[in-house]
Length: 376
Image (cartoon, rainbow, N blue to C red):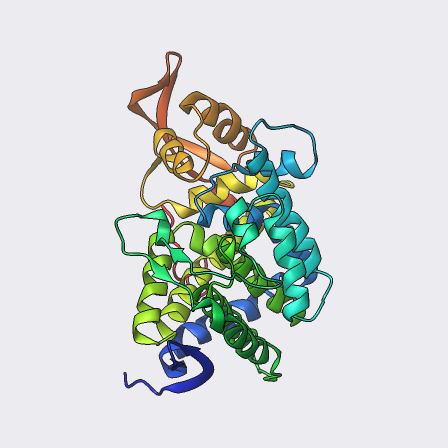
């Protein structure tokens, strides 16, 4: 397909970013058809349920902080005190930031400063604080993508140019495009997301601020289903950082937008299945929800050991037996998952490992709608 380049009013290294919208038409149409069939996702309550606590966890997971959903809930309800004060602080900060963006304030320099102060509270180093100007950093920054020191770091824009770049970004955000579809607004939110990361106006907390500002834009424009996008990134972080670097090199934001559209479609399909399960059974706890979400995120045969390995990749590690007792067994008791057969290995002295699946009686798999999700 031939690229039909649309020059954007945003720059990288003195050159304009561009987008080839025609490349995105197929996935855009797939998303719009899906959302037309799942209108229940397009409301404020849906976005609120997604943001608190699931997207708080996902936004932090992208940064390498694997806080279990139960820990997020405990921090937000103040039911448990943790020795790790930074863990509690970064969860509380995102909660405060999300509450702030729900207020519907305009995205501008002053309000962004307020958001950043909420997201960065008690998390910045003394160097970061002493080298911050009134709004942005006053020194160079080096960006290690995916926390990998073996990859040559990138840099944000020179600190003396941040003001101009950010003003350009605010003008872009607040231009009224009168888009016809929610997906067009989502695309714009993700251009915003990329460019914020590219500018890197702070020493730290840039990624969380970029993604939260994108959520802010979606909420201000009542684009509720796409609030789920942090979750899409959290399971494929290496691709996220790779695509960001490709866009910075080629000035073509289409790479990033195509990645995020395809991954968010998969997340919306998972959300659809979870909604069917909940309506067929009973109200799910956040831990139930997270367990089903991880089951849907895995491919192929599922055993308790497979699930535990997947879970421990994205959370503070738990023992196999605790994962079985606290996450798998409750869903068996609720008839949400069904045991298929034992394997030759054990979970404990008294319990065989076994293959399981989601109970097919609780959801309907319509392949005209659920096109990307792999289920056993």
